Image 1: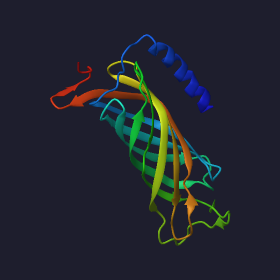
Image 2 (image 1 turned 60 degrees about the horizontal axis):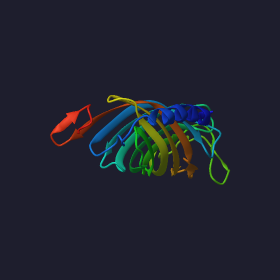
Image 3 (image 1 turned 45 degrees about the vertical axis):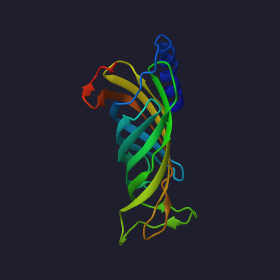
Image 4 (image 1 turned 30 degrees about the vertical axis):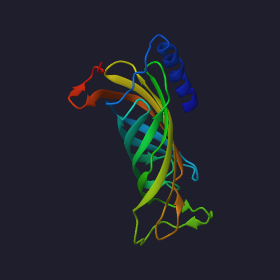
Length: 207
């Protein structure tokens, strides 16, 4: 379903951008956004819903540094999911060269997840783990590694549209065994941006 939505957004944006000239992104661009993200766990039959946010700074027309965070709102399966699965990421993105306001990118974002199991969940060995009664570590922080792929489209000097897909790899470690945190997470929506560099902080792109 999300592939259809992504194609629906991409096709008109690509056609609009043919009328423009010159790559929009460059050093000093600051982009920010908040949204609702959706995720599918790869080792459990669970879909997750998050509130998420990003802050991104472009160090050149090809590289940006992005910090991201997400907070789990709920899951479709409370028996095989997580009661908590919040994350903080910090990484670098590579932006493909274009001649317009369309900004495709890919990158890596390592970080950590604060996670807590709920109900009866299965480990990598597929042996059922009982509910965490009496656990000495009900909530743990665990390292995760993320690869990202997506695009931004800078529609005007204030707003940008974005779509982003992340593959998250990691494990929840506790006193009852390791459980996979592997997840495919998708987000899209509206963001804001402005130009910030020494002696300049405006919505208009510097000449």
